[in-house]
Image 1: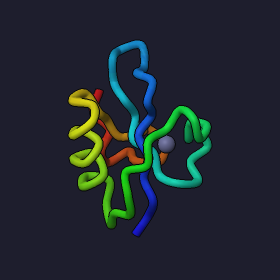
Image 2: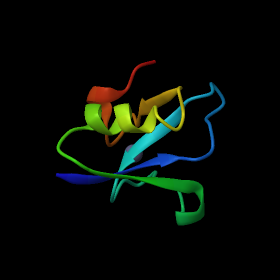
Image 3: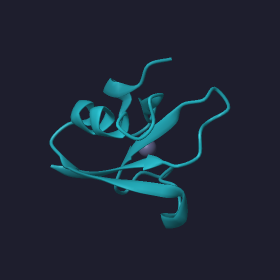
Length: 68
Ligand SMILES: [Zn+2]
């Protein structure tokens, strides 16, 4: 299991990136939304999409959930 967060700020392409706790690219606490404890990034992205329809896995920490 891992703690996941979604970036409150969209990337230039409109994606809200989903990160695992500990990722180098994890946004600062005021710029991220806590999603919960998930066993995989797919569940985390599904949760993130309740807040931001255009959510996407981080290329670095959640590559298997990253779509370009
Ligand atoms: Zn990340």
